[in-house]
Image 1 (cartoon, rainbow, N blue to C red):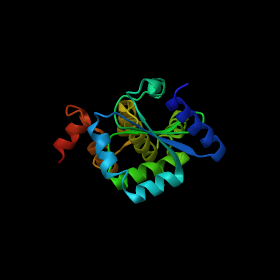
Image 2 (cartoon, one colour):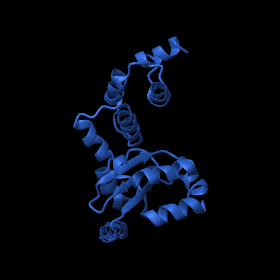
Image 3 (spheres, rainbow, N blue to C red):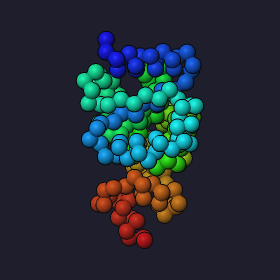
Image 4 (cartoon, rainbow, N blue to C red):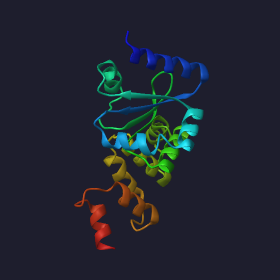
Length: 191
């Protein structure tokens, strides 16, 4: 029974008692964005105050052999990865990549909202809900979690009457990376 496993299990027990989420920052020593977060975001007093007030904060090095079970279980494939989990280790929100201070606080704020949980959005989607706001939010959360979102992206555009709408432009701008896709070609032809 090693220290890191003890550290994680203690956080899980505390989360159960305090009915709060655990914020897990998964990093590696060689990860440039991880180092950038350490120097530019975690040193910010507003970030520290917000995260320490709202979450049990845990930082783990993905290359430590003792935590590989944890990173495999939660499908950590890039760094940094930010996990917001409950005491049962159910992921409520997952995101990857460096964030500016304002974005990072927004990520934490979103994690505090059960309506923003990946599981909540998935349930609503699977129940047949297809409104524009839900689809946009679901695409965002799937992408942040590093999960496939192309089918949801296609469904979003199927529900849009006007691809030149503000919402369509936001989705094309943020989530369409295939320059041969019909969505990008539409944008190029109608610039």
